[in-house]
Length: 355
Image (cartoon, rainbow, N blue to C red; front, side):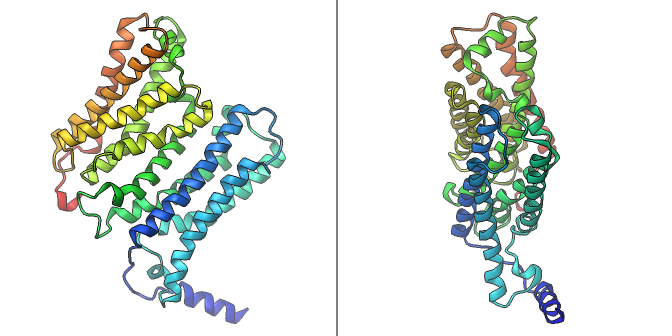
């Protein structure tokens, strides 16, 4: 036992070398294993949303979810172990950007065990309570840290630069996009992406209908969820064309899983909005150093997203909603919220070298 303790102390003692970055290929593998992890959660979300009387923790969808965790966490630990074998110890053995993910691995396992006990004692949640379970909240926070590892790795990587290519930035985009889907899942009671076309038209056809206020609120919540990650990245990098399309295409997967993709036209409107946002980025060139362009992009991107949302709903849901003030004003409000979000994220222009 004494020898084991000495060996552990030697392993944990920092050997003092500067932490290094992994290769872009390693980050891509981390991101792809994170996709396995994220898709497993989407399958589990589908099961809880569409299957009744779930009575056990041990399900096929939990198997996909937790096997994804095992693979991505094993890969992260392998990156550390490779450095340990090369003679590094302590923090010096942890690649840059990988520390938070490494720490989250045992924390996630602990919350997973707690979740199993919770389900065994209290049963399986099938409604709104699933989004407030303490064990689920612990799982989602630690999962966020794990799947955003490629983003943290790329943030200050010396080979990325201020204007990275789409291929080089792809692992970071995948990680952040899947993180966004986790947020949308746990705020799904305010997710406008889950609405069907006819329901949108119906809700905005009566100002006295509670459905109108619920949809309006869902649009506000979803607007912030989908736009904030894009603005976060645009403050750091000159985003390559296709970045927002990739993120929005991934972002529709979680609400799609929950609704069994029965509202496909509305989901595809967000992919189209991502493409329009990419065009706006190419035109405006928003960045931390170009505050005016950044703010303009934030407002126009949100306005375009929700104009497409209303337009697609009207085209596929039986015509324009009956209250013009609602369907004309909602995209304007979204644009103003986007502008405010942009101002909050970038109140002052940031020097490119310090971004």
